Image (cartoon, rainbow, N blue to C red; front, side, top):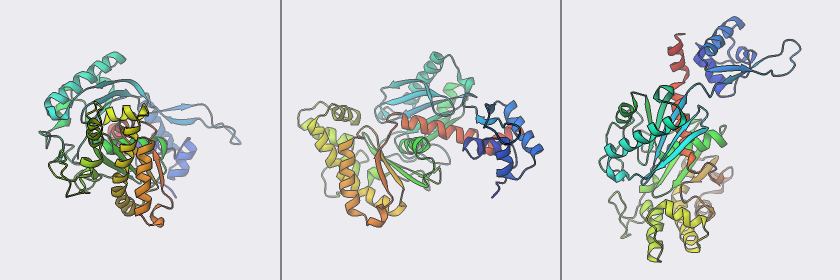
Length: 387
């Protein structure tokens, strides 16, 4: 079956996704003439979006040179913002981290203060790397709340006072020198990162992020699924115990985040004398082997598994990854205990449930993928090269 191709951007897409490794592969995949393929490939070579290197081995005639996506064509700057901190990075176009830093920021401080600090941090990081905003294909920004997929703005985020509808992309773009900014929910970005690195051929992929809050990201047929207005996967505010006296940061009682998030586990640990207030501190205790942290995290996992059972029954994913600051064996064990108990065997017979492999870098890699997918899409490249 051939692929409809209208310009060099479509050829780039074939190369990026591993569907074509030589000019001959492009001919086979598209049905275009060798002359037309040569024109498309030459345009991409001139734009430095691909390179030709090595050979693919004997073919009975001339050896074919490999077409390779040029991950060094430009850079991407990303900021993965959580409730109490932000992970900053400069990456190549494949998501390899070239420079990184972390900031202690509180989303409760509001968008102006947080985004100004992120802009300053990214500027310093670029300077440290010997680069500038002019070297960027774009900037990726993830936030711990729903992001409208059309406007790119926070959309009634339950735990981000003052952020609703704020033009985060415009603010950051202006502070960095008019570079394009793409925004996403933090769990969506992490899901895209884990998917791209470890499971690129999976049709239905889910990630649950358990940090100070709880959220889920969904990737279907290689694309992030965000729902009607960015609210898909916002499982932290599912009411699991309406009679609970615990108040969620959204103002409601009995939300999953109120009883099973990193903040909830930290609250219980503080009663036991541990000086912890949020998910990252709980994660540090888990890594040190603290028994109370492990026990309470496993209990939290059981509550999370109750909600994830519904997601598994609806989406029937092939892979469900557990990530975030609390990602650990106790959390995974707790999720497994209730998830499999509450689902029919048919819903889980092909399910792989595992811990994430990228840690804090999951959202960084996912944001890079988001920027590259949009800025170097077939349509965008075709417009740029006017073909």
